[in-house]
Amino acid sequence: MGDEAAAYGALYAGCNFFAGYPITPASEIAEVMARELPRSDGYYVQMEDEISSISAIIGAVWAGGKAMTATSGPGFSLMQENIGYAIMTETPCVLVNVQRSGPSTGQATKPAQGDVLQARWGTHGDHEIIALSPSSVQETFSLTIEAFNLSEKYRTLVILLMDGEIGHLRENITFPPLEEITLQERKTGPADAPSFGGAAVPPMSTFGQGRFVHVTGSTHKENGMRDVSTQSVHQELVTRLCGKIRDARGEIWRIEEDYMPGAKVGVLTYGATARPAKGAVLEARRQGTAVDFLRLISIWPFPEEAVRKLADRVDVILVPEMNLGQISREVERFTSKPVLPISRIGGVIHRVEEIKDEIIANG
Amino acid sequence: MKDSGRNWRIERKMNIRFSGFGGQGIILSGYIFGTAAVNDGKSALQTQSYGSESRGGGCRSDVLVSQEEIYDLGPSKFDVLVALSQSAYNSYIGSLGKGGILLVDEDLVDPGSHTPPKTHKIKATDIAFKKFGNKIMANMVMMGFVNSILGVISKESLKKAIRDNVAEETAESNLQAFDEGYRMGKEIN
Image (cartoon, rainbow over all chains, first blue to last red; front, side):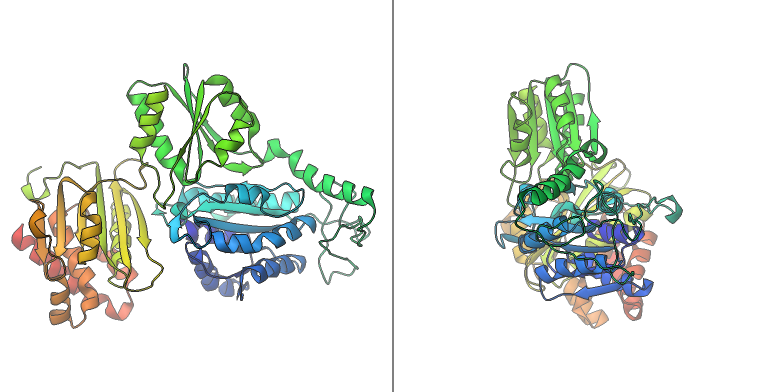
């Protein structure tokens, strides 16, 4: 199951603290963590709500842990405030959102991809975010490990943006040998190195390790002390926080491309939707339509270079997604060619047939 | 194919939908079928849908078995529909493809005048209660029945998957319930 793969990916990545509040379709992640963490000297805490859950993982990281929480739409909304806190305090941690059909409680147990833009802009203020979106159970496992690695490399919160379809999907998975897993170590520095400046990604301190550190969500100087009135302090801090991700976007982008000569139509997709979309592309090709396929694995930062390249190749881009057109809107920012969303909401994923028909109609 | 009872066009691929209400072991049935298919060396995929209620709500569990990569995570038509409640039958009969096979608990489901030609009935819940003392094992009786009619997954893999996924103290009676359903399927097949 995708949810279980996320939990085991976290354990392989060395996650030793999980705090969460149950919600379908993400609860199975917590179930696995509740079972496994106490066996491996880790901590599982069932919190009273989602705000406290994300607060707890941020605290655990500053105490030296590697931490994750998991939720779905309604809980994701509640966590927005502290997503910003994790970004502002440069706390490496992983938040899994197994998207379900909203708004509000919506179709409580059914899958959707309606939180794609909320993941980008849900918390207030200028910020950059890293979000990865798996298309299979196997990839959920590997991307969870990547999410931890990216969070450590850039000292920030990373979102694993799953959808309920993949979260509740059971299929074949192979666990690699532990020694084949590469983990990004947390960056630490000399005792006098500032924790909040001096480098694009400053070294991190840990509570109880022999130095005074002040951690605040308010605008702060390089040493962490609060300064909310000096314009240049805020400008430098927030510009650096955004820049450390924006400038590294080429390293963060992850895509799958499958292009062919003469394609007039391109399919751009992500998450569970990539499965029927891929099937549709292969079927359309069998029936004689040349079509390009681009899958976004990292959704944020948005892989704009790959999107421009696709747009240069084709006359029209189809974007199947389980919402009323969110990523398709982002695609439009990078091309003047027509971008046609193939939207499907209501908790039921696209079928190969319907995407194939659209490809052929536009090819 | 030699056996007319297994005369489904799908040697490469088969979609099965288990349906009923929460608490009948519908999702477990799909899970066990999918696990057994993987143990048989096939590609398998299982998805599920249920209401917010833990018991009593509508529930389905879809298993897609294939020799190849599976792209349609939510196919619109199924080769096989297993229904353990009237409301599940009413909801999902439309998803049974032309020429598909319907399997029902005949005490709980009345297919009415639109009974598909390939319909097989069994008193799964009644047998589970009377022979094994627990109607919760209806899903095991049903799985044995389904597998003896479809023959798509090896009996050994299914029994192993059952053993691995039920409480140890109930494994034997679950397996007996499975065998009973299997035997009854063979009788009519």
